[in-house]
Length: 284
Image (cartoon, rainbow, N blue to C red; front, top):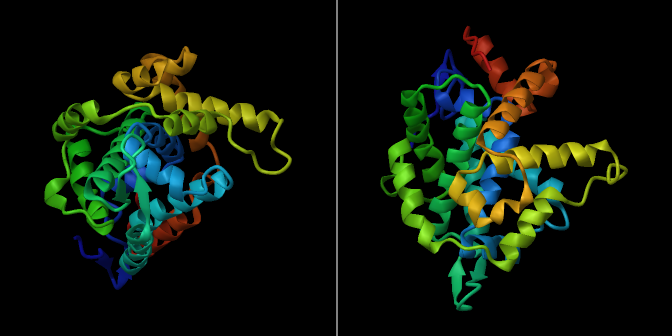
């Protein structure tokens, strides 16, 4: 695991301002990437069963999304101690949870390495793919460096880094190997429908906010690899590869015009402040 990066006594976290992880995680497209990851993760029957049996995503979807995003931000932009404490809490929760295989009924641990690895790979591949298709300039070498950096995040949740694919080619092979194990279960179909039509915050249920959310979710779905969209039967959506890429780029351009207090979360702003105080000026 990486030690925290320190400059002039300031803790810049496990990755630091010169990392690809800061560039990928430091923009609002991360929300779209997170939704894309959820569609992918739901295709693993046990992973989806673990969520359905233990999560409050149907009764508190916005709290669930916030907590997930806050965890990613803490690991990426928090200090080393903050990242390790957040990961320890997550490991402690996962250690206690169990699920049941939707086909056999067999009990399994939520922190089973196969499930942790699937969740991790779907997440990091979705984040970097969405960033790249949204216009963040990343070379092939940058992408592989990002996957290597994110082995630190994999280790934090309890995985042996040696068992985690850490390059674009390795992840492509991993997806190919996993596809025979994937399926659309009843819970997966319900989760996909809920992502498009969640319980909205109070007073936003039947306002343009719902249409905006559905549009963002459609972009996330359109950014999925073709094999994943086909698993869902396309959901009747007309968004294809080119349309999803153009929509992601439009979203990124729109968000770059926002003031920093809206463009970046408090944890990102705090990390940028620490970096600037150390004389560094990362462009996010």
